[in-house]
Image (cartoon, rainbow, N blue to C red):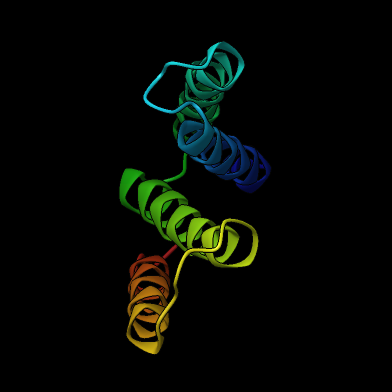
Amino acid sequence: MPWIWLVGAILLEVFATTSLKFSEGFTRLLPSVLVVGGYAGAFYLLSQVLSRGMPLGVAYGVWAAAGIALLAVIGAVFLGESLTWVQVGGIALVIAGVMALEMGGGH
């Protein structure tokens, strides 16, 4: 069950970070409100993940790695940002590290 909460936390964090791009330094009201609300919701859901027994290192590692990977893809596909093979390799290494953290947990 904590994994469902974690997916929600990841999606809200990605939504909030993407909105941050459009807030133009918090000078635009709607994107700025979406940033604050999205991050608040993401942290609330992450707290629910932890209260349901998922280890902190696993929860935060998956949250961060998935967020980085999704934001890099969103930036490249929808926002015209570059994504080099070195960056793709780095994302793969982060994901591999999180997988190692999860598999090494012995649970």
